[in-house]
Each structure stands twice: as structure tokens, then as C-alpha cells.
Length: 295
Image (cartoon, rainbow, N blue to C red; front, side, top):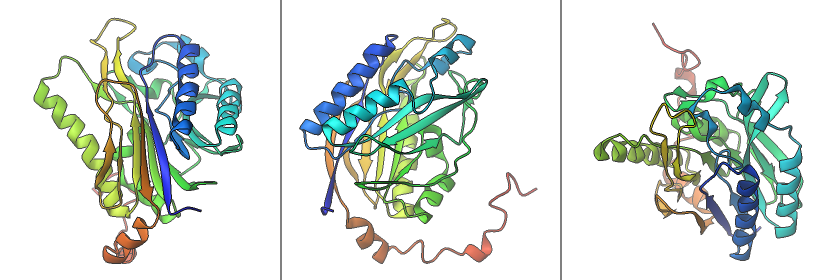
């Protein structure tokens, strides 16, 4: 295995045409491979618009089984391009049971593993609890030909426990496919506070665990299908942070991009030798962290 890993982040704008969205994702995988990527990360729910802005049972028709038609096409593209791909799909597990699921394809096109989103938001414009059953696969890294990937999804990024458990189980990198943006009516300073907090918390996961972090967000404006709100302006800004939280590369806010960068595999070892946070954890003193509150 080489001393570096070349990563491509696909920052995509999605339309109402789901077939066109998937074809665009496949094209971006090809583009990334042509640029030398070994690992390609797609954004959360890249096959369609972010339908969770409203509660509508007809959107359950968009869910599909895993494996299924979308995984077959993405797996074929991963194999043809010779790259590992992290995708994000709306999974139909059974009637009435649906998940927000990341699927990882190895470079031979096979499914290396999947992760079902554990933390499910229910905020204005992000009504995910209506659609997604919380994940039940736990926090387990997925072994691939490019390393052990700690794949999480979007809202998981606000919870340090998820990142820590992935690190403790040997993840070599943390990966967050994401769909997050602004309410257009928010004041500019509020928008910047939100985006800065989002970047900061994930950089902190890199620092606390001595691991690189890959965050891939969608971009563009998507209207609320009901017209009840002003829609969401997804802020892009996909980035890779190194194990000291340093920004290695970051995308822009408003444009589709295939962002390619290298990380040094040996940096985690170097950083953990000087910042041995995992060594110094007081595991004997953390009773209560498995409780919601300590009243």
C-alpha cells in the first residue's frame, strides 16, 4: 500500500430528475478516477433532491433495496474505474422500515459494507425522523482495498461519540457524506456561524482522534416542494482535514466540483505519538456517558 491516498470529493447539485442525478454521480466517479483518485466519496442521498424538507409518504417510493438497481450501477462504475466509492442511498429494508444508508464499494465493484445513519434529525426543513429508522449496525469501520473507512452520515458529525467509537475500532479515516445548508432568510452573520460551527466540530473530531476527516456536502438551492418554507441553500464547502485539524483542501459554496487531494497515511502515527489522547483516556472515570442526562 502506498504512503499516500488520493481522495476525490464529489460536490453535486441535485435536481428533481433522479436518473439524471445518478448519471451525474457516475460521470463524476469517472472524472475522479481520471484525475488519479483511489477513493471517491459522494454526498448524502446523491440520487435525488433532499426530500426531507417536507413529510410526504409518496417519497417512500424512492427507496430501494440494498443490493438493488442503484448499487448495481454504482458497483459497476467502481469496478470499471478501479476506485473505492462511498455512496449514500435511501434504503428500503422492509415495508415501513427505511434507512439513510451509506454503501461502500471496493475497487472490484463488490459491496465492502454499509452503515445506517444512527443520529436522525427532526428540525425545520430536515424532517428525517418521518422517513428514516435509526441505524442498527453500530459504529464499525469498513475494510476496503484502500484502508479501513469510518463511514458516518451527516447529523452524526455533531456527535463526538460516533467518531471516537470508529477510531477505537481502528478506522484510518472518518468520512461524512452530508446534506446541510442555510435557510435563505437567515441573516448573513447567522449563516457564517452555522457553517463555521459545522467545519469546526468535524475538525475537532480529526484532532481528538488523530485521524483525517473527509466531509462531502451537496451544493445549490433546492425549493421546499410544499412552498411552506423558503427552501434550503446547501452550502457546499466540502473539505478534508488532516489529523491535527488542518484544512488540506476545501470546495467552494455554490459550484459543483470534483475536488481531489492527497493525504499522507503516516500522519496519524506521527500525530498520535506527540498527542497520545487515546493513551491518556480515563476509561475508568467515564461512567455515565451512556446516559442521556445525569439528573
